[in-house]
Amino acid sequence: MAAGVEPRPEDHAPVTPDWTCGSCGEDWPCATKRTRLLEEYQVDRASLSVYLGSCLAAATQDLRTGPVASLQDRFIGWVPRSPRTS
Image (tube, rainbow, N blue to C red; front, side, top):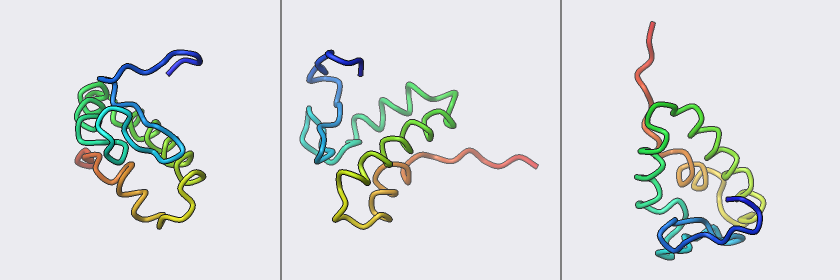
């Protein structure tokens, strides 16, 4: 999100420092945002992983009391992996 630009309610953008969804109040990324991210990054899962990894890094700073493993599952554990090629 660009500086000074307010997210729209339908964006399902994160609200920090709690990392909740600004639209539905669920933990971010919520189910709706996950679906949208998969659609947006359908061809480039590597870029999706980089984006979510940067969100994870920021959330780790904000949510210091939570276990890191659960944050990893929440932010990147749900991303489908492509089959490995030999």
